[in-house]
Structures are given as structure tokens and as C-alpha cells.
Length: 88
Image: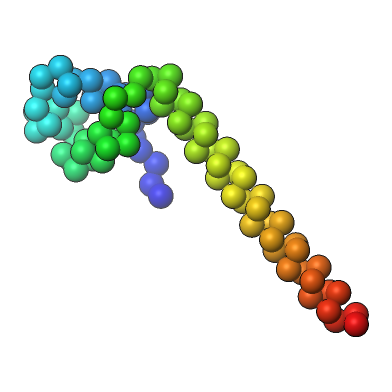
């Protein structure tokens, strides 16, 4: 997945502009964005504050790390099972 040019705090600030009366087209032109990006951000970050976004990011990172750990453990478990079956 491609990394965003904008930080989460910048995204929240852009969404606040829209909440304060700006239209999506005006804000997208001002910040040189596609309107689709703003709608996608609105779906993901709508109604959040900067601290909420940081917490969300840290939870997503931790979740990815845990998923990798589970995948590695499952792979090791499968290798152990194969090893045991070959011995008997």
C-alpha cells in the first residue's frame, strides 16, 4: 500500500475545513487532492481528533505485528508436525 503524502494530523485538519463549511471540491483544489481521497479519509478518520488518530495508527501497527507473529507461529507449528510425522 502506498504511503500518504499527508500525516494523520494534516488529514484531520483538512477534514475539519470541510466540517467548518468548505466544500469537498474547494478543499481538494486548495490542497491539490483528489475528491475521492477526501471521501476515503472522511470514512476512515471522520469525527476523530489528532490524539484519536495517533491511537488508531498505533493499534493498526500493533495488530499488523501480532498477525505476523501468528503467521510465523503457524508456520513453525506446521513444520513441527511434518517433522514428527516423518519420524514415525
